[in-house]
Length: 343
Image (cartoon, rainbow, N blue to C red; front, side, top):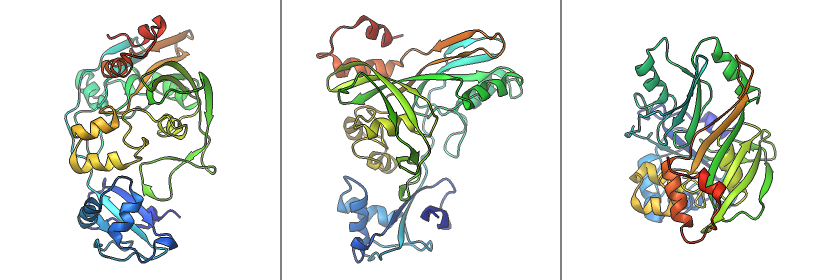
């Protein structure tokens, strides 16, 4: 059983705390805890490691740990970080398509889809209830991460809700994403077939490539290259959590702005919790959110039976990012120009 499942949250810690676990391998036995944590989190200074252990370090039994504690082989050390405070979020929801059956929205980046312990009023579901009323509010048919922008499909009636959700579950929805990634990808097209699972240690919101994981397959096509970056079209055949971000990172082409799967792994995510999204951190990340956009959905209309394709224009912040990255290097391409045309 994974170590995190045996750990009891210490009294006073919020239920939605962010938990990291670090099993101690034999070669680390006898090392000071602050040094041990420093080895496990990239770019962590000794001073910061000491500060983090003092604030949120715990042993398996829930007792507080100290930076000077010596770790023992076979035990697991824990960091319990407080959850994010709810920040301001955009509340505009541009409509891409609407009929008696469905509503398609172009979700802005930074707006969560559903309420959580950190987000309440600033969510897509809450805004829809404000506009349509609780009983008549469109029901969201799938999910997008808070930072991911783009096409979000909702049902307009109770009868259409299971039809749309079933189409997603049965992979009858062809989804296309656009991402701006680090590096100019060598192959124009390809398929990433790498199974994924939860890690045995580290940050417990992460997914990792593992041979014993669940099947995860992504097709990709490079739409443009320039300035040491690529604009990539992605078509996931499966729907694992963080699939596109993990797969691109595994290829060595992580998404610009990704706080979990970039070159520094989860260090920027932890830094954001501690200090907020500072200008220096944004400069390291390359953007203030991961540059991923849900671009299109192609499917059979559940009522009319006709083929339908819906598209959400690339969000303005990603248009500006691509323009900045490629200003002096990208060859003119009319198709790509249309793809990233500002709205």
